[in-house]
Image (tube, rainbow over all chains, first blue to last red; front, side, top):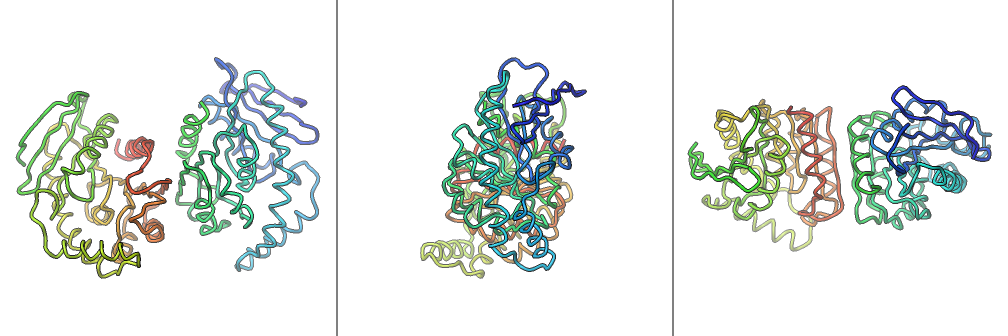
Amino acid sequence: MHVSSERLLDDGVVEREFLLGAVPGILWTAGSAPGPAPLVLLGHPGGLRAMYPRLLARARHSVGAGFAAATIELPGSGDRPRIAAAEQARADLRRALAAGGPVDDGIVDRLVLPLVEQAVPEWRAALDALLALPGIGGPVGYAGGVISIGVRLAVVEPRLAAAVLFAGSVVPRAVLEEARRVTLPLLVLLQWDDEGNDRRRALELFDAFGSAEKTLHANTGGHTGVPAFEGDDGNRFFARHLT
Amino acid sequence: MHVSSERLLDDGVVEREFLLGAVPGILWTAGSAPGPAPLVLLGHPGGLRAMYPRLLARARHSVGAGFAAATIELPGSGDRPRIAAAEQARADLRRALAAGGPVDDGIVDRLVLPLVEQAVPEWRAALDALLALPGIGGPVGYAGGVISIGVRLAVVEPRLAAAVLFAGSVVPRAVLEEARRVTLPLLVLLQWDDEGNDRRRALELFDAFGSAEKTLHANTGGHTGVPAFEGDDGNRFFARHLT
């Protein structure tokens, strides 16, 4: 793990950009903390530069609640080399959504499943590196999308203790099956009027999770309209399960 | 309004039993408060004596968060005279649920609609009396079931500023239509595995509400298994909208 820059933000949060092999990432920690902070991984749909303002706001909120927060770029997104098959699947998805018809399961599978296969080992490698840093401790939470990545991480990563998942993306059939094997405490956020989201599939996914403690928070509004109070709810959820 | 008893509970909460005409009720307030407390009406399915332990726990939680809390007995329940038509409808509902088939809309209408017609004016009369007491102020919140009573109150009662509704009862078609006229901020609680509840109808009802701010909290577990943290969430919701 190579830290390429470190700066102190005006609210005392320390932001470190890093490279883990060829994967860029960002770590946010409190400038001063009494002991190791539990780590929250910030999931996102890809494109760190474009997502930066929203990620920074989420990170500040996490650090303010006593956590460290970190994220990495997704395969094929941002400054990383494009993946031809993923680009093709994304174009096919856009075309299907624009046509207003139902999206073929084949397109969803081609878009999401290879992404999960490649991204999850990278998130786990990032965990290895981040948890080795001073001031960062377990247990670990995952917060955000891509929800299919969160589901796979919840199944395979024993250091993950709880997850806040954004039901804001297309979900392959296979992920619905995989969700039955998830047993972590979950908080699932659903934007009720999300234009790019299949509400029925999202509810089906919530139903499928095997977790004894799972909570769905659905709010009015579109994809990016998650109310600010959900940030507080997410922090309190992590406080219950990570501290 | 006739106060029939007053006692100080061990945690400093003052509990007053009252009669409003023939309608019994209970009011809980803080023994000492800096000023008038916003009032939260505690809805329930009827039967104050049987519901008392759960109502008291909810009331203590509300008072601890700075509110006053009050409830009244429903028509035909507890110590109030039975209503023959309602008893018949309740028996028909039990038979339909026991048979495992879908419940006929006619039974639901016969059970719930007359209850709403009679109960809502009683809740409003209770509001008149309670808000005239020293130490109790507006705005007012409604928390609980019967959800159809909450919907009607939200439509007709201008002093109501926010509601936490338990999606835990059978809902007439007409209430789905009425819900479109609700514009209050809402927090709707749904027990995902509620054996006596129609999940699809509950989601349809949440979808129908006309409120710009509405949030659904769905949790694993049966009818009476609402997690304790939802009490805190409800108090924070009321704190946002009543204070």
